[in-house]
Structures are given as structure tokens and as C-alpha cells.
Image (tube, rainbow, N blue to C red; front, side, top):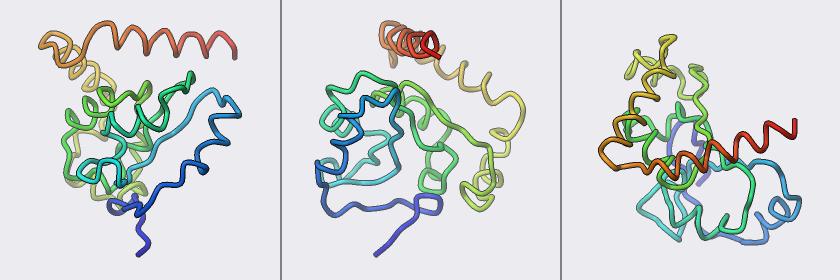
Length: 155
């Protein structure tokens, strides 16, 4: 059955490696993942799955960006879970649209504080706490920053 990650989790019954190969061969400066579940790690959304990122994007040198972290497929995850799981899985950039269309307004209703002007401060606070606790490593964050700076210098 067809699903839409704006509303709920999409299940991919099979993965055809040929589908991603053109994007890797193009050496695109960045790739966006999506909120699906795959046979590789059926208990975890690909956005949060280090297994998926490492298997399918292990040789990819560009930036890995999450799909919108305000989509309906992620409604049951707190902001802290979405931020940390995305970074731990290997994403370099986290995308938050703060748009009602991403979840038909359900995110704004459940997490109204994420639609205030200080969302970036909330995310920074989550990352700083995780660095202090050791949930995220300083080295991994520094690598992400360097990758972003490298791309920016080419623009």
C-alpha cells in the first residue's frame, strides 16, 4: 500500500541498490534521506538508522541532510529524539520546515514550542547537553561542521 511520510511512516518492501547509484555517481554535494523503514533495519526509520546510512552511503563524501523533521511520520518522537537520532545516524544537516503542511498541523498542535522563533536555540541546547553527557562526540560534530564549511567555500 502507498504511504506518505508527511502523514505516517512509509514501508519499503525491498531496496534496489540501483536506485541510489546514480546519485552517488553524480557526486552530488548533498543527499536528503527520507522517513522510511527498510528491510535492512525494519524496526527503525532510515532517518535514525546508522545501519542504513553506513550501508547505503558509506562512500558518499557530500552532506547528508534529513528530510523535514516536522513530518507526520515522526510525530511520536520528541525534539530531542529527532535531533540526537538524526545526528547519531550520520546526518550532517537537520531540516525543520516549521510548516503545517508537513504534518497537516499535527506537529504544531502536539509540539507548539517548536514553532516559536527560538527553535534553533532549543536544538543547540539539546546538542550541548548531549556533548556534555557524551551522547554525541565533539569530534563527530566538528566533522559535520567541517563538511558544511567545505561545501560553503565552493558556493
